[in-house]
Amino acid sequence: VCNTLPATKLACVVSKVEFLHELPAEDEVTARVGQIFYDVPSLQESKSIVRLSLRKEVMITRCIKLNTVRMRLQVAFAQRAHIIVSDDNSIDWVVIIHFYKVHDMLTDMIDASFLSMPCAPSEENKRTNYQKTSTVLVERVIKCALDAIMLCGDIAVKQATVRDMSTWDIATEQHRQEWVIDAT
Figure 1: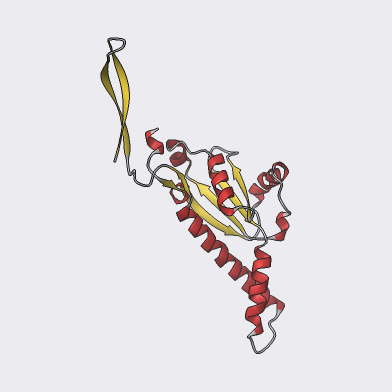
Figure 2: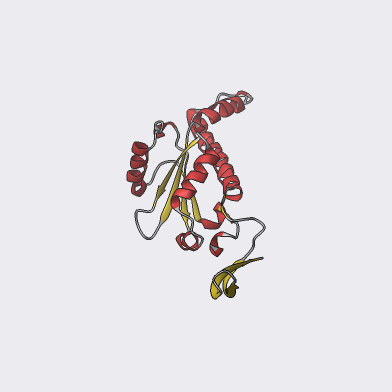
């Protein structure tokens, strides 16, 4: 119980963030299973993928389950992303976030930015600009999510310890052990 009291943000349990434009081979099976179990639009619509590697030891110590992380991310991103969690192996715990319709959001922005240019842009320039812009957008969204999403605890509690204490029970007229949580 004491380990769950200090505030734990998503940033506290993430060890590595990777911004990808396609799913790595080791995560494809997990993504397909996620599509089968959850009602998901085609993941081909967007190439904006984020792979979060989690600190397993911190999550175990603070009693945070992978499903809790998935549900908090699902609520935060509403219907804008598909969240997949994987604890298939004992080494890495991974969260894959596949954003929907980033292409639709950015196409209008990029087309508008090229309208102000004196000459028409090539398809190569549009593609390069799209990838850079989509990466910046997704990086900003993830940075905000890491700082804003609270997984467990109370922000006022910095540390908690537990101790046992012997008390006298008047009703049974016996000594009994009680556990006390000291929080600072």
